[in-house]
Image: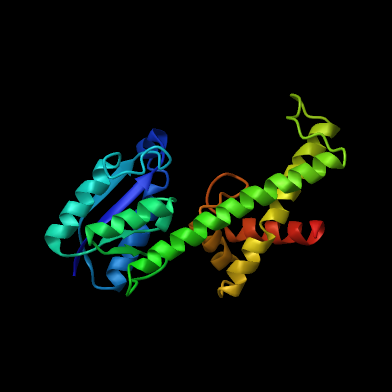
Length: 223
């Protein structure tokens, strides 16, 4: 089977440095090799998903769709959020009648499954945001000052950072429980689940097994 690959990074800096692209391309290449798929061409987009969730705003995605149609094959991405984090945008892609394969999810017999995954991810992000705000409000009610720390740091600033970190850990408790309920037991599997759900790690990037381990310990401490 012939297919096209689509990779996306969200900033010009990432596009220039290749940060994130190599991992995406490697995941797609490994999936293609394991499933006897020939990647005819790889399309690379350097755009912000927040402002460019249209095929017009994503010219490389538009070209990938056109080539996939002409080949009669799928568009392959490494992660669902490389297409979009917006459920409506992903649902809109289905009307093009081009198969999308997400390497982390495997080939789906029904394209609507991707719509479901996107909806779940979007809902979880919304819940995380709400729980984090609630946790921060509770910390503020206890007298913790949540303003930014002064240069050089001080005890109040440290307490604020700790409060924010603990509130976020508490907000992720149900998300991790949901991951385990779906069969994600290992640290690495939970890390992939969190990343795929569009949840940034404390460092702002993808989750690692080590980051999940630290999160679980923090959850136990604040539970």
